[in-house]
Structures are given as structure tokens and as C-alpha cells.
Length: 250
Image (cartoon, rainbow, N blue to C red; front, side, top):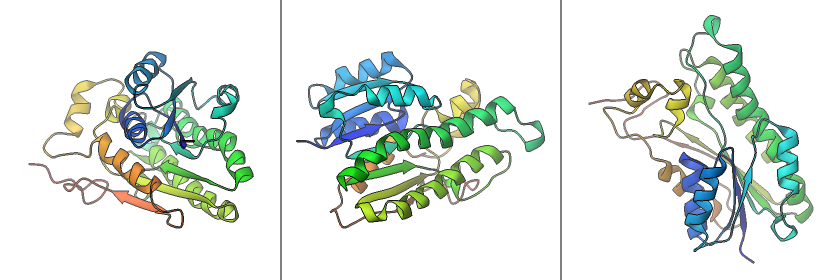
């Protein structure tokens, strides 16, 4: 039977590209997200090359996470690869001007959402003594930049959780990997700037940012290494980026 990949945040950007590439590599796809119409479009696109199941839920809602995963047909219950991709940034404000609503959203999605999904999937991997988890972190999990306070904190948490997972699951033949991207041209900045397309556009002007397919390529590469090989932690940047805030623009 083909391996099954469970991908959160599959309705756009990195998650969507990852679903496409893994499907072409022969994986069955469980695509998860909040926008059902986009999930339907993705399933229609991929069903000629792979088997696809979609789950519509918000990772912030543990009850919804549990219900959705429990609803999987029996022959889809075995998840071989979990890609914890769902996450976002809200706002770019100094700590004394930050929005509590934004802070809650980032912590709930980037940290608690990753934990809720992982808690539902990992016990099956432990029982089978096999599996692979790829957590999508960020350069913000390694560096803190001005006005990035809580977002950076949430991605530092992902980095710590990734390391903790690898330690805790070492006895169960489960690989745990993290990809920490720099600037990737997705809907990320559009969400951060509350739908302001002009501000979002400026983030990616004057240089070539990473594309979602670049990260998806790396997910596929990591997932398809021999069983004795685990790429535990990978930082990937566009050539123009030297650090979180150092970007060469023309």
C-alpha cells in the first residue's frame, strides 16, 4: 500500500505545493485546511494521480481536530508522514502596542495547533513503531527581529517542540525533522498585514524570494531519505537573505 501523508495548511502556499509533490511521488494525501472550496479544488486536481481525502477543520480547535481525524476511514488511519505546516503571523507591532487577539491567534495556531494535531497522530506511529514528522518552523525560531516578538516566540516554541519530539520518540523508530524557511512568497505577509496587498507586495520586491515549491521539494527530499537517515533540522533561505532582517534588494 502507498504511504499516507497528512498535511495541515494544505489550502495554499507550502502546504498546497507539498500535497502536489507528494502525490506525484506516490503518496496518498490527507489534505487539511479551513477553506473547504480550496480543499475540493485540490482533491479534484490530484485525484487522477493519487488518492486524496480532505479534512476541513481549524487546528486551533482541539475538539474539531480530534473529530476530523477520528472520522478518517479505517484504511486511512495509518499516517506514515505528518507535515505540520499550518501556521501564520498576525501583525508586526512592538511589544507595548501588540494586539492580544493577534498574540492569541499566533500561539493558538503555530504552537497549540501543531500540538493538537501531533497528539492525535503520534500515538498510532508509536504503536506501529514507524513514522516521520516534519515540522515547518521558521528562521524566526532562531532569531528575534524588531516587532516580531510573539511570532518569533511561537516559532522558537516550534523549534523546542521539534527537538523534544525527536528525543521522546527516539525509541520508536520515528523520524522527526524541522524545516526552517526564510522569506517565502506566499499569503503569509497578506495575512500578517491584515489583507493589505500593497504592504504584502513590498515584502517580496527587489529580490527573488523562496517559492512554496522550494520548501515542498525539501519536504519530499527529507521524507524520501533512506530509513536510517534523518535530516533533523534544515535552515533554507533565498540567496538574497543572510539573516532574518538582512536581505539584499536591487
